[in-house]
Length: 359
Image 1: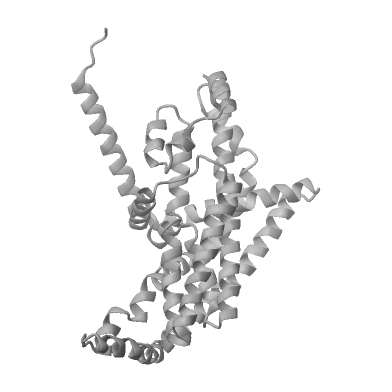
Image 2 (image 1 turned 60 degrees about the vertical axis):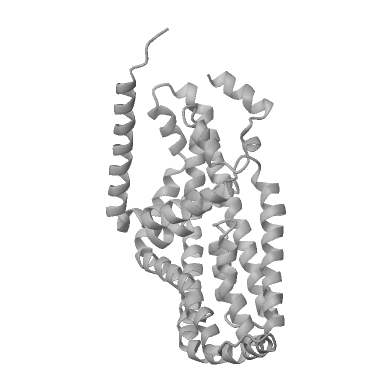
């Protein structure tokens, strides 16, 4: 039986850890360049299926890319103008909302007095300040807006990525020492990443439209802003919907009273329950879940590393890492630790047969 050199294994482990730390420090230092590149990559992944669909309709690829970029720029500028004006107007209205909040909490203090609990409105307001509740949302949107200031660079990067998307799988195949052995694994990885990003974006878009429409029907101010927030935060499962719901529920309570706040909360609950537990699993397929702890830690980690954009893309970035680990025999154990349900990682008979053929 061969003897294992524990000292060399320990040195190798320390070397790998040092290597990872150096890479993360480099990414952190180069975040002004890395963040627009990461955002461009995700936009390109989302747009690529639509470009392929246009090319199948005999539209030249260059024309299809240009048309897609025009649509993205127009939508981006429109949303930026609407969201920016909504945030500025909301900030100006905060003193008025604070006064309304004091009035709404009047009945709470009266009820508490019947139980001999004396508390002032100002004390309640200190714990339920609408400015504090919205600070995280506005900071994140402002961070994304600052990144979008490099719109020209992002659009150019997306254009070049879309033109290179046809040859990227072939380049990855030939970049390996044994292209034939890894071909199926690379194809599965690229397909999984593309499928996840497209489906997640469509589900998030549907969630934002439903939330925005529902809030407009209820009569909550800045319904479009909260719809955009719901769209962005839907990329963060489990906790993202909670973070997105807090400011709009509080605004509904301030503006329209407890009944409207309850209706707003039910709107978020019903929408995210149907989208997250029915629609998304139906089209996403299995093996793409992350545990709640991993979601929370990834939010902290990617937010620290890449700022606001990293927080919004924390789960997609972690999903890419997880999919890559699942495609690698040596990293499958780590993918199991990241997964929400171990049974989801159990290969189907067809996948097991394919893996056997690859090996």
